[in-house]
Amino acid sequence: MLSFREAQAIEDLADLLYDFLPGSGNSRTAFPIAAAQAGVGDLWVPGSKRPSLVQLLGATLEHRRHLFTKLIVAIVRQAMTYRRGKGNPLRRDEVDRLNALLPDVSFKIPELLDRTFLDSLAARAPEAAPSNPVGLSAERAQALAALLIEISKLPPHQRGLRFEGFLGELFAAHGLAPRNAFRIVGEQIDGSFRLDGQTYLVEAKWHGPQIGFADLMTFSGKVGGKAAWSRGFFVSNSGFTSEGLEAFARGRQTNLICADGLDLYEVLAGRVSLVDVLREKERRAAETNRAFVAVRDLTLPNR
Image 1 (cartoon, rainbow, N blue to C red):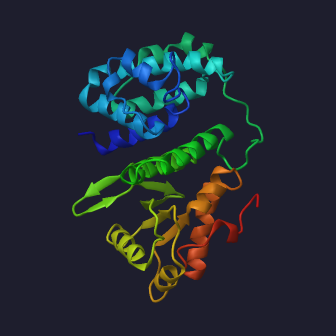
Image 2 (image 1 turned 120 degrees about the vertical axis):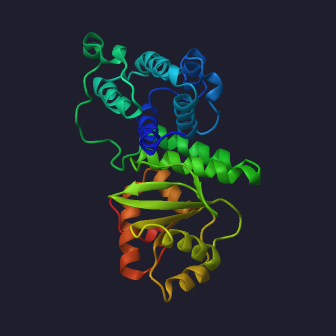
Image 3 (image 1 turned 90 degrees about the vertical axis):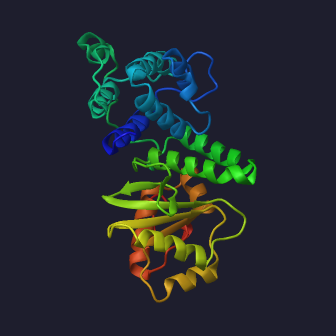
């Protein structure tokens, strides 16, 4: 089993490598092709790209550690070709960041530290005013929106797991250091992320009925049973009942903030930043004790 440090390093590596290659749809350069070249092709599990990448890196490190270097080198080699073809060559600062992360899983790769190789890479991208001020590239937002549509077409028993994967990719795209779903004695947590030094536990629901008081109370109890600094983020694609929200707000301090499918649409449409949304929901919850305030009712930049 991976140590906590190794598990976090795998998450960080997945965030960095995410834009190196596509997850599929390319016959020459893609993560599953690099995995096959490294001899770990069977460890790539098709699906949402980031969870699949975390699975590939983690399983290789845990079960075929002797092939981990070969896998990373294969990814970098293919990325050099893929990214150049996209007009966005692999950069020196990206490989420097990769070299800084690898020691956390007890690796250094001489080929990636070679000075001649590093000097041949493109320079760090110049600092400039971003064309998309909310921090989510148009390409990645489009891919996430397509994934959300794909989820809606799946059989009901598959939607929940894929929705969790979607949220993990969305959190990663906004630099929130997500962790995948995990199980502790007696309960399941759908994941977690970090925002401004605070840890949020995640509950994700994709089903027909809106979430009511009982589900809010159950998740609030899970969060309340963890460390005092834990908070909860409840995402329901179908939304929440007004009665449930009113009852939940009465007589207790909320430890949750909530979002619905329309909130996600606002983020994917590039109208608001997820980070701004979370921060303003935090503030409204502190001011009003209401766990859910719709994005359209928040005071946000770019709206």
